[in-house]
Image (cartoon, rainbow, N blue to C red):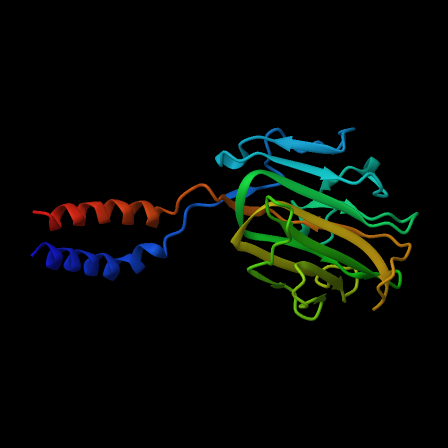
Length: 251
């Protein structure tokens, strides 16, 4: 009789589990224009840190190379009227190295493992006969590259995005540098937890691989994330339900 009750309990558990397994834990957001303390574009440091981002319990450090062509190599937030297109407003803007053949990058390091449900880049284009390039990479806590769960372009025909599966997602602008013709990309990392996210930019001759001297500025969109240590509500509910059903089966 006990075994029969247990089978019935498990059957009920499996029947209702899919309803709860579709429930995801709430994400927190790295909102560049709402960080506490506020992003300091006049900082003399090579990095800025933020604790308990959006109440998540996760701290981040944003570091950047020192060879960007403007603003003393400190990224700044695109705001009106400087932002040339609506989707660029509120993004974190950084520029390339127009004097030497070196890329520039921004790296976000998380204090613990996280899943990224949404992030993106904006403002890829062709300007002055040169093509803007962006590479997005994510790494786990051991420094190993992580494949994106999803990736693509929000602006078909305006961005070339590689699909070679090497975990370094290189995109190139195909449109002109004016409103409505910038290329944007999006990504998510929800299969394997990550610790670090790096964005790298440079310019090339159109269709070429070698870095060329040129002007380039790119925007990083807000990032939705969830600490990997936070259990899904479904997991908590299922554990509690399982205990309840087992207790009932023992009666």
